[in-house]
Length: 162
Image (cartoon, rainbow, N blue to C red; front, side, top):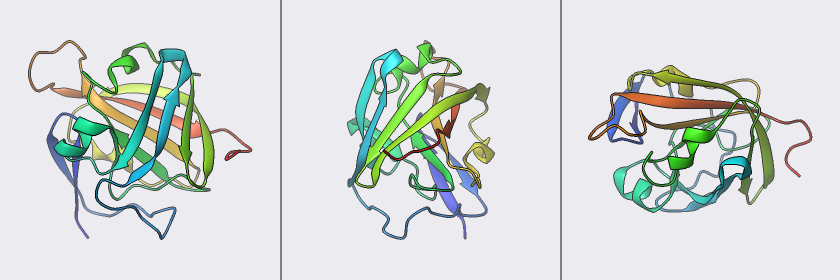
């Protein structure tokens, strides 16, 4: 199966395999997936299903084909660098991220930050351990379509969800 991912700045990439979902009940349309909070950078906003332009104007988007929070899988979230993910310019390794859904509150800790080209879709590959990947355009102050993506990778903290 082929999956087309729209990554925050409007660039698309094609994946050859669809990542395994953590849930069979996948949201569709502009369904609310939950809420993301990163207290140390002052981010708190809702997460909608989808990563197309109309969704990303309204909220952070759950990237289709990536897992939902659960015991395994890589949850992919995209957001614009000049709106909802603007505060990611201040995120650091070790910072806590909370993702609240109807299944509970999942806590993650940032383990890496890196800058990649827009076609580096391997950052969204499925994982055996529960992980979270945030994607936004980079650099933050670039005028126009940014040439790179900032990838924030986090691992779920044990005893999550609460």
